[in-house]
Image (cartoon, rainbow, N blue to C red; front, side, top):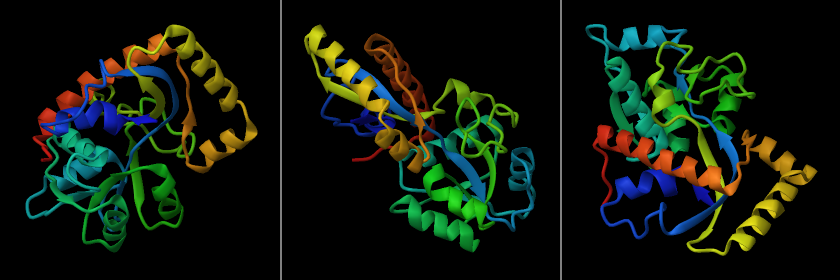
Amino acid sequence: MAHTGTTAINPHLYPRHPYDPRTDLTPITPIVSYTNVLVINPKVPANTLAEFIAWTKRSGVSANYASGGNGATNHLSGELLKALTGAKLEHIPYKGSAPALVDVMGGSVSAMFDIPITSLPQIRAGHVRPLAVTSVKRSSYLPDVPTMRESGVPGFDEAGSDLWFGLVAPAKLPQPVVDRLYQAALKAMQTPELQQAIRGMAYEAWTLPPTEFKSFMNIEYDKWGKVVKLSGAKVD
């Protein structure tokens, strides 16, 4: 099972990454897509993304954002937001997103990007306020939360936006085997059990034929590579 991080981010993040996802893998199909949502502490005086960005630029304001660690998608999303909008935000890396979210709720950190499965309960409880999702379309789990483009920041579409998990196999897999795996995946995606599991994780079911998935993965590799370079993040 491949992921945005393992195939599109880590090769740019780790100087000695052990494989090239463009040549060492055979893409089968994506399985799900999902988004990051920008959430802020409710005491931050902002109800929209534009208001939040303006607030970070005010004299005397010390705004910051948390992430699950250097190079994580919520770190890169924060750096992309800064580059596209000029938002004044200090990055505070944590060892995982769970403690980061706790500190956003507590108010010691202003904001963070987080995935819906962990942020939804806190949004519904009023512990954090959602401002925008990074996906191209609104999340079905957060239908009232605008996208970055709708909020006036279209650059997230050209850079990393939707996140995903997908099936891959070793390189040079015979085409008949690729086709069988793809058809088996499509069949599995129709089962009530898997559909329920996908909804339970706040994911969106999503598939592509192998050739289209390969093209998509190559685009993702290039897009996220630019974001990693922009952030300056490196992991030894």
